[in-house]
Length: 231
Image (cartoon, rainbow, N blue to C red; front, side, top):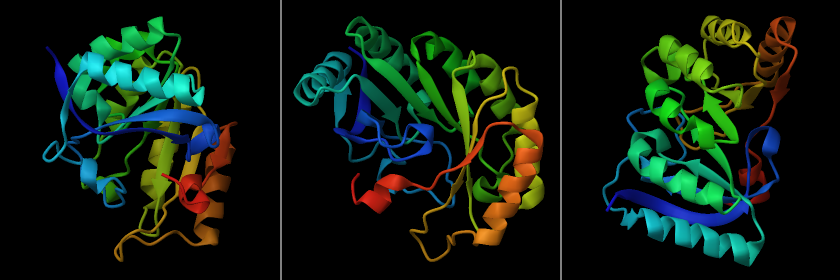
């Protein structure tokens, strides 16, 4: 019986990107190979301390919440959910049989794993991780991830005060090279640690203006759930 470390399953409103405000069920899996400077789900970085749940238990819990709260979309997040791709290969078809929409949130560094589950995804929220935030460049992985996404992905780039403009423009060029060209969401970081400072308005405006010269679909969307005081 397949199991995975589950951080939490709960219902709320989506707080990021173009779907902000939509009611969703969140399935948060624990464990992530990245260590981003601005991570705001530190409790989910490792599987340690989180219960192991079976495929049937996860699906049953999601469907119980779906019926109770009249929600037809589940956001699969983490940690990094694609670290548990074998588990998701069993969960996703069962959810689709129940007419549940699947909104996958991913760091975009596991293209081979995405290929195994992309057919069941309705929306893919893919981060482009700037090297200044992770200590490592993932340009090739990001490019392949977008190629595998079948046009279902939008791209989110979190920017902080230390975000390098040349790195950001490399990311914009990568987005522009895709067919179809995905929506780009610029997300100013919500500071949660003393070392993570939000960008000033002039920096946000510069990044947005330069991205908009190359892309037709660019948004600036802050994390809304923290403004709303919800999870």
